Image (cartoon, rainbow, N blue to C red; front, side):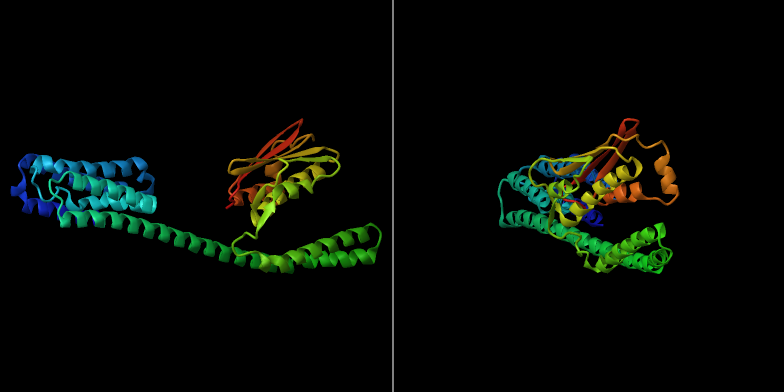
Length: 354
């Protein structure tokens, strides 16, 4: 809308000042370029996919070219440029896209060029150039502030949705799983023998689940509580048959993200212990630039083709949720390679977490 208003204003002023042109035909061409470029940018900026750096660069280049062409079509003693305030369209596009830095750069380019092509710089000319610079910085700062507020709003909405989902799951677990575990524990004690051992295990799992339910309200609102030394936490997973190797220095990750990464690695090792008894495992931790990479490899028989899809169809979500789900929530990737000589998980997550 602003571009349409600006081009209408520019066309009206150029028609009103038509007698100021030394080369009227060239002036008409410049006005036509303004109209055509305005139509193109209205179309281009309407779709985020088309708001590329190339379009933004061309936008500023066209505004600058029309500005520099003013003395050629109006003569050396001109008082007003051909585009006039129309150049604000490109300036504000840079400010919105690249925040205050983009607004400052575009404003300086346009302001310096506007002053450089004039024989005499009046107070009005200087005032216009000064307002361009201030406007570019202010609009860019406002755009940055608005985006930050939108991100905070989205984060708050996600946290509220997650809290509601945790509460719903807690109710479902309490009404179903916990009652069944309590029944198994009671009946196992009554029956004795192997059933008693089964009842004891059910009681332990009941205690763990109740602890998770009671702890749900203690989850930090921002998902982060301090930092976790991933190297130290992974070292605690070492045991007979499991070798852990790391860089020898602390590898810090935001609290919740660090705990989720360690939990994903623990799930990999649990799968080896459950499905390939006696197989050895190796865990390798590396800090590469802005990412943390963990490799979990074993020398078991591998995973048969289609076994993971079959398990997911049966509702057994150990791999899809405990490993891939956790890593995906952190903004990372979990790649599985398996064959007769063993299985390897390659997990990569950003240091910042998500």
